[in-house]
Length: 238
Image (cartoon, rainbow, N blue to C red; front, side, top):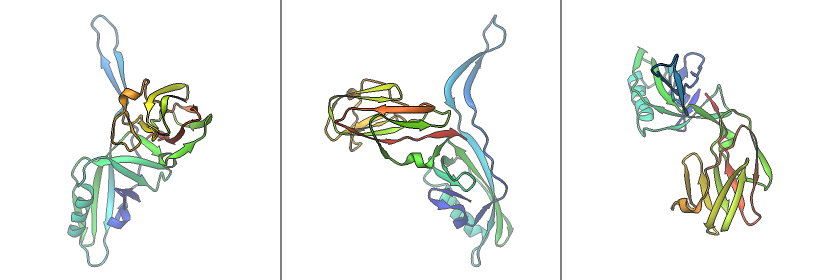
């Protein structure tokens, strides 16, 4: 059973046909041939490719509904509001995936109340630990452990302001200047820093790179005049 856009597959009378296994994402690497040099040069783009995944499903319908009606409901569910949405499934309940339907699909009638379809999803290469998608306050000099090899791209909400604020995240110093007392939001995933309401950018108020949570322990320190709340977004490869 899986959930997409907040709707469970069994609510749409779908049953996954086989054990679902995800293809590992491919590293985006360019192979370059250089005249006069044996072999190839590898140019690592520093990213993983999205994963195209097919999910074969059976359709078992209740009394009063036929395959054609169910197919119309499926199209309305999957083919509208195009973009990445949360995807969870029973085989990996601790993680939240990001997925979109990037191709059309056909529904095959087997009998009046039985059908078959193959859903074609495109997955973001990183899946996120569900518990790490909840904002939590962090204490000064506390540690966030990233148990995965993938660098996490957190969201930090700073409460309080000042002329200069220095926050250290796992050895990476974040320098903020002239932050209003209402604070600000630093989002490494979107590469944005905004006011506390998220309505105005504050790029001129940040004199450092956006912090990441590296694999292992990441100690966080900050001055006593501010509070820090973190959505850590710990993730692993599919």
